[in-house]
Image (tube, rainbow, N blue to C red; front, side):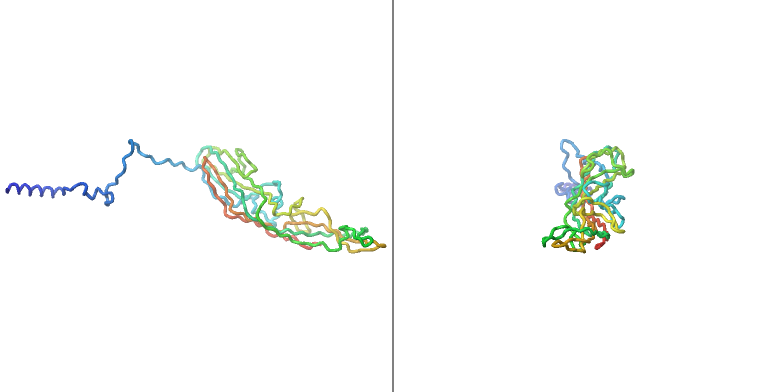
Length: 322
């Protein structure tokens, strides 16, 4: 009995010195929630190890579009600078009037199939036209029949009222404008010869394999007929010392100041001639944010400008110039 008890005591001492013998299911270090415990993962299927997807670097570095700063930009056109504002209004294109510019740079030396599209811009216009007359101070003395036997004969040369001057304000949504997109080499400023679709709001180009090449997108516009009344022959003219953008009327206006009679007839025996002109005195365009979409390697990036404002100022076209 003593030997048996001694053997049992020796076994307990040896197990205490080497670490307690416990059931593995009760070992807290095998619990994944135990601090420092093992992280258990599912074994790969059929021995395959999943690789992370390869990330292809972007083909282009693209800056946000902004108001154009080129010498021919819309925002450099003011009455005070004598800018050819008529070029903005007429339906045919007279030079390039830049509204938006955007710069991008190629990342790698690889050929790139590029597409650039301008979303149809929207916004509002406001303008004030001035209608006035110029007086020919040389009077006309030939007789014009104005009335016979108390029956008036209409002839504008018999008008006795002084021709009036007036202002004609207008505002509303921009409903007429023509836009096109051009892609330029930023260094030379020359349009790329590899682009097709010039003159419209979408172009496609092939960029040569050059890393770090810089290009510029230009969105230009004209044909803002809302700023005018639709009269033909819009152009730059001069009234006295004032230049204006507008047109002259095809017919003269008159003021008769002498009405002699002969029998039962009344004549205009003395009158002045007036030439009417209409001028754009104030002009403004408020654009909603303008979006440009750039597609390269099938991936499209759309970026928009902030809201843009063009204000030509006041041309100070005189009223009552007679």
